[in-house]
Image (tube, rainbow, N blue to C red; front, top):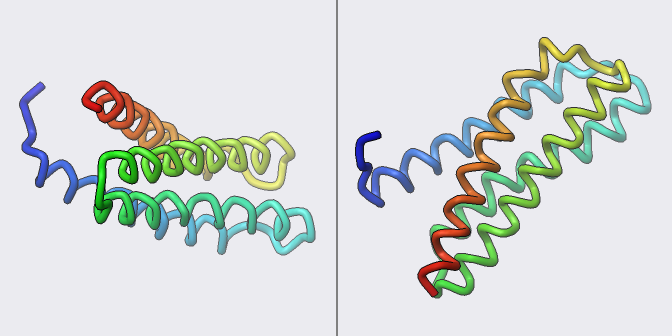
Length: 124
């Protein structure tokens, strides 16, 4: 795997997490208009939008400790987003085929952020 410099990595992840939020909004808009879908969908949209917002905040951190804390929130919110997608599909509210790309991206972002957080904690 080729080495990517820090600025390019940060720029790419900012764009990726923003796209994730936009894709999540589109997914949410396609959910059925049932009460269950609305309740679970709001939980999903809150956690998925938090992924992008908190990564952006992490990039403006004033210290390694603050950066670590914000990355920790991104990890938690990406995992929560995956959970809500699983609930939405396993309950039959939406099809896994519609949700799978978003679930894959949530899990990939989760893995990237968990690795980044581990790197930060090892360099304290």
